[in-house]
Amino acid sequence: MIRLPSCDALTGAERYSVTLLRDLARLPAVEDESADVVRLELTARDPSDTELSTCLARDWYFERGDGVVRVPRAVLRRIAAVAGAAGEQQTGVRDRYGRVPSSENVLVRLGRDGEPVVSRAAQRFREAVLASAGRRPVALCVPWPEGKRWAAAFTHDLDIVAYWPLFTLLRLSELARKAQLMRGMRTVVAALGALGRNPVARGVRAVLEVEQRHGVPSTWFVLCGTPTLASLRAGDLTYAPESRAATAILRDLIARGCEIGLHGSFATADRPALFGEQRARLEQLTGHPVRGVRQHFLRMRPGATQYGMLASGFQYDATYGFPDRNGFRLGVADVIPAWDASAERPLALDEVPLCWMDRALSKYRGVEEPDAWVSEGIRMARECREVEGVWVGVWHPNLTPALGFPGAPRAFGGLVERIVADAPFLATLSSIVTWRAARRSLGIRRLAPDGRIEVHGAEPVAAPLALEDPAGRPIAAARAVV
Image (cartoon, rainbow, N blue to C red; front, side, top):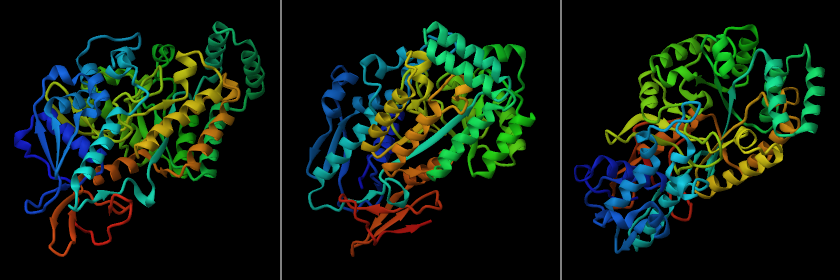
């Protein structure tokens, strides 16, 4: 627990960073002015001393004291810039798909994109609070439900349903350019054997069977626009969601308890009104609310596209990830509020950044061995586990032998097995976002003289919120006030 400075004394970026640090560190804010708890104080420091590389080297300049932790204001502004993707919101550089290139990301430029640096900063912040507490009471929010210390979310983008032979031919061309002749031959054999058998639907079922065997609830992002010849050639909208094949897949996903989100088409990045149309169309098809969105090809205009998502009623965005590498684009392995850098204010939209994707290596790095993709996925999961965060991975169900990916289904089974073995909290993205938003709202209203802690939270959820001591033991005296 910690007492924060008055919001009136903070700029928008400082307030955003204080909220992030407190939330990621699992420190509930104390509102009781009479309580003797650790407090946060802001200090001044020359901004030239707080370049990101220096902050990383100096453990973010957290200063410990007797009942106080001090942090420079310039450090808070640096954290907001990283977690809020400020540089990417301000640049006009685009790649051939209309995306901000990874090279514009500050962590990529420093070679630190493989680390959740902001989540680690929150850990250092919590350590400073604990070291400064002395005999003062300290309570932490539990990291995840069910006694779990980290979380994992398996997600899938349904990019292909129809015209699968066309995509097999494109994949064969890709393999030929890479001189992957043996892999190409295996693809041809598998494709010939799959004629008349719909390998896309079989690939979806294979993924679902692996997840069902391990008790994994997954989230699927589905395209929901009208395909044209131009969209098909661009790899954008490739199937009609009302088609027999697509609706059969949707029925199967719903029957197995999967969450279905919108895979926003290319055009939504430039025409935000399309978000509402595509969301309504998908909800009509599924009969369920669509709470989340991820952009196809991760194509978006950072900041601006999120306003379109917010206006269309989405609860969360799962787009922030690198298309051409695996890593932590926002420096976090967790759920955080979206940030408008120009207005210096958070949005009522949660960001759930992905940190690993199957095709990041094969498509952009030339790594065609599925076991190598999985090894990197496990490495990313280890980073997430170490900061008690959430691993969000993307596996495309069309990665089957008939579509040019021999060995991929077996590798996916190994990925699921290894991640589940590390005992994460497993849930759909909307469940994770809802729970994390509730945890973020948990605050301490009063510390009673007899030691009881009175807490309150704005969003009660099915999985109970709770407190623990620094050793991870439950604080049984805590009670919730709704």
